Amino acid sequence: MTVSCTTQEHVGIKFTSADLTLTIDDFSERYLKPAALALSSKIDRDGLALYKTVYNTVGTPGTTPGSGMTAAQAATVYLNGGAILDEYTTPRDGARTMCVNPVAQAATVGALSGLFQSASKIAEQYEAGEMGTGLGMTFKMDQNINSQRTGTACAKEMSIKGAGQSGSGLLVDCTTSDVVRAGEVFTIDNVYSVNPESFQSTGRLQQFVVTADATGGSNEATLSISPAIYATTTSAGKQTVTAIPADNATVNFYDTTAGATRPQNLLYHKDAFTLVSADLVLPEGVDFRARQVHDGMSVRIVRQYNINGDELPCRLDVLYGWKELYPQFACRVQG
Image 1 (tube, rainbow, N blue to C red):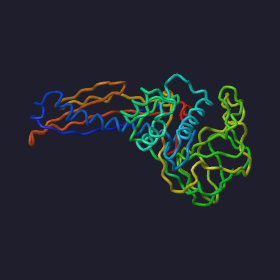
Image 2: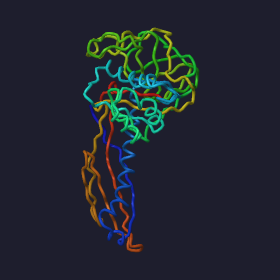
Image 3: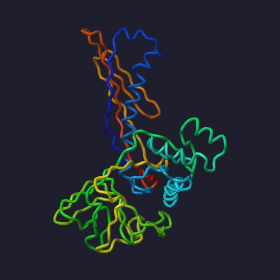
């Protein structure tokens, strides 16, 4: 699998020669730390945008996990996500992370604060306002959780147009000009998921994610989807479903409210996605240049001098790329 390292982000900062007389701690706190945080936030948001490659989905669109729920109801939302990961043979090795937005964290801590926890764990939740580890996953709050906007087709009835379809393209009947947006999830009547090792039916309808925007034309549209539809193991062992869709089988969108925007909290195993980084060239003819690798991320800093204002404009750059490796090792939790 190829991972493209093509995204470049930078943060610009500017200071004077007088600022350089600050202690290294003061200079770092005032200039370097905010710049590094801004860069990391951009990288983080790009990574969370990979939710659009994830087809497994639980929860109720428009309902924050934990909000107005009993402890058992709130726990079930997350446990359902964990169960789907189990169906796809995701390792249970302590490397599952549940990334939630601030609203979901607040609601979840409130709902689950006393559920099957020791007194010390409850105290930690109360003091930190965070879930910590529970339900087989480590909870993390992230302000960069992405949201999914639905198109117009999800609120209407769509069906499969033509029998015998397999692969990553699916022709459907729809109203002319209906819009389906990348990231929307749907199921198809009588098309069930299979265990990736035994190829036995899980008894759960396979969820598919649309991987590119589509608009209906002449009352039909071709949807690019993941996973690809393979109903037998003859395709290099790629069986993903129990059967190919029947002609006129109903397409059921997970979120049926047109034009809605929903947070996509994300449960994932560490192997579901990967982040790569490359060294940017160090340019000649500048006042200062350097490069540092931290936790696998290569960061370049370049500084120049402006004699008119006694200023030193500076920029920090990163070149990186995200890629889904095993999207079946992840599951969205609707908000």
